[in-house]
Image (cartoon, rainbow, N blue to C red):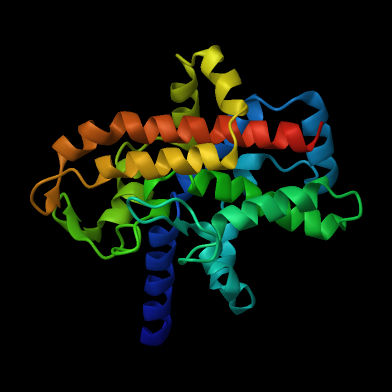
Amino acid sequence: MNKRLQILFILLLSFQSLMAWSRTGHRIVGNIAEQFLTKNAKAQINRIIGHNDLSRLSYWADEIKSDPEWKHAWDWHFCTIPDGEDYIPGKYAGEAIEKVNEFISTLKNKKSSKQDKQVALKFLIHLVGDLHQPLHVGRKDDKGGNTIKVKWFGEESNLHSIWDYHLLEHQQLSYTEYSDYLLLNVDYSDIRKWQGNSTMDYIKESKDLRDQCYDFSGSNLKWEYFYKNKELLEQRLLQGGVRLSGELNRIFK
């Protein structure tokens, strides 16, 4: 691999880590959602995507970002809501909320082509996960923590990447191991409540919860930050999966 290709490869990896839960995180969300789908939803999803499970499709929306034809989709993965403001479509960067609603409409529309439904489903699986990461509902001034430089156990990083990647991957669990762990003590009254939540419910949650992400001193984040935020990280992954199942069950009644 020549030097130019090496630089391009490194840049692509960096962009991916900045833009979404890690591959493991998205697979956890997809895997949890699978556990709470109705039989009818499973059957209709299989007619669209065949025998792929949601966890395998959950990272496609990040993988295609390296394709120039999908350059326009970069802003679909987040939204921006400054402190003290409510969400106003089109006022700031990020189109995730509009795209979630658009993809839901595509999947509900009987006239949508199978190909359009495949794309809509893969994006919806991904974006519901993204929007449960608190910094994907970002402040305007720091681009969701991307411009806040920190270290993770001495390694150069930024706050957004800590939440997208490092907190999760630090535990070195597979997505199935982590999913099983999160489901061990799940409260089924919470499942029913979360499945009934709207997109704006979990957008508002992420906005309210993101303050915790900024609560640290110094620039080298280590065990203290990890243990302080582990519970929130796991709650958002679990909620993301459950709410994804709720969205899909409503679409495919």
